[in-house]
Length: 113
Image (cartoon, rainbow, N blue to C red):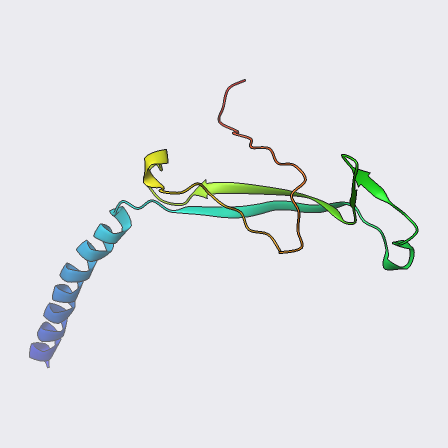
């Protein structure tokens, strides 16, 4: 019985000797990954359907129906810095086909004013 226990322990030691370095390798592997997070999506202006044809709301002399303030944060989820040279194209944000962007601003919380 002790012979089979020694074989089992030896087999487990071999498996551990193989898997532990692989796990460490994949955890330390350098990766660059950009993700986004929607911080807020707040409706600023909106008109109910019952009175929508009776009220006109203008933004820069253009009529708007529902206006939302959306804040999006881009985050580097990887463990390596991402440079401008790493991307062949700029970041594009696609909203719905019936959506118009009225204005946008880019904030860098790391930038010193």
